[in-house]
Each structure stands twice: as C-alpha cells, then as structure tokens.
Length: 221
Image 1 (tube, rainbow, N blue to C red):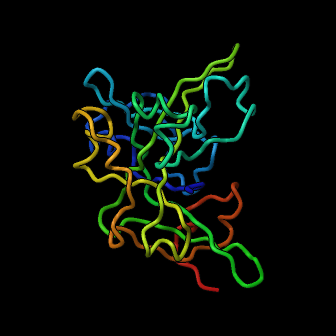
Image 2: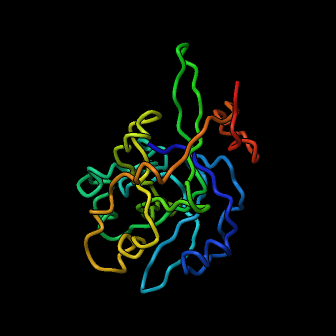
Image 3: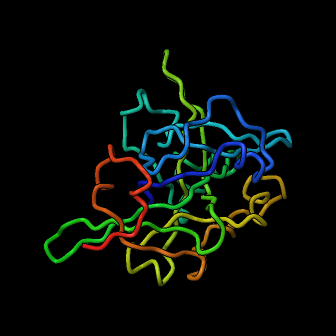
C-alpha cells in the first residue's frame, strides 16, 4: 500500500511539467508528511484540458452516507480496480495522476518496532502515481476524492513491502489520463527495480503530526 508521501515541487513547476492549468486552491508545499484525508495535488484531463487541482486523499464511494461510513479507501488495487463497485466506473472514466517527491513504507525489527523508509526516484525529482477520482456529496458535505492505484512490488521493493504505487513515466501520462485511446490497464505494473532508491528515515515520521525536511533525510540509529 501507500499510506504516506511527500511533495516538494512548487505548483507552478508541477503545472509546467504536466502541461496543466493550476487551480487556485491547491495545497501548500513543501509537505514532507502527506497523510490520508489531506488535500493532495492531482492532475486530471477533461475536454482536452489538463488541470492541477486539489482533492481529498481517501476515495468516497457514492453510497457512503458520510465520509466515515465505511473503510478509508486511500489505495485501489490494480488487480481489482476495474471490477470493484467502488472503483469500477472511476477506473474507466476518471483516472488521474498524483505527484509525489517520494513515499514512505515501514518494516519491523525483531522487537516489533516500526522502522520507516523513504522511497524516491533514482532519476529526476518527482514521481507520478496512477490514481482514480470521484466527486462525492451528501447533504451539505461535498468532496472531490482520490485513491492511489497500487500493484505487487518489484523484487527489490519486496524487501520493504509487498505492495507499491503504480508509478507512471511521462510517456504514459496521456494514456492513463484517457487522452491517448484505450489500453491503460497495461500500465498497472511495478516500476523497474532501478527506478527507485530508498533509505531509513527518522521514526518521528511515524506520527502524522511530524513535519519538516528532516523527515526524508537518511537516518542511522
């Protein structure tokens, strides 16, 4: 799964990178500890126009009566995203890109203590996660929500976690966003082993209240 990530790229740089028109309400960056239910940056494509917008991280199916009416769907499994009722229509019609500088995963030591790792690209400064999105409204509550699509981890990443986000290269963005015809399902696979690097980071990131650039710095006990 992917339950925490970081983003440091300024909105104008992201807008240029994705050739997207930025909204006025995108979240503040840098953010070194993005958590579920936070507002996140998302790239969508509608009517031949890419937009950089804010969405709530945590997909809300239309049948939820409130944001807490069921499980918090921060991830969508690639193997079932096209079939599960919660995600099926979004997988066909509302795919998106979720920018990240890197993401966190955890292992455990012999005593069961959680050890955080930071995973980042070996080249470049940004990752683009595959995502799905949906508008949700009940009464006076309304959110635009998203989830990160995950897949089985590549062999190197399996040392840390058995799942990882689907990470898309620039050449695949148009296909995932629905701009380049059909065939997006073929993109839902693990990134090559050489695409990512990782290192241990300070356990303070175990708290969703932690912040600051030191969260992604290498850490040795």
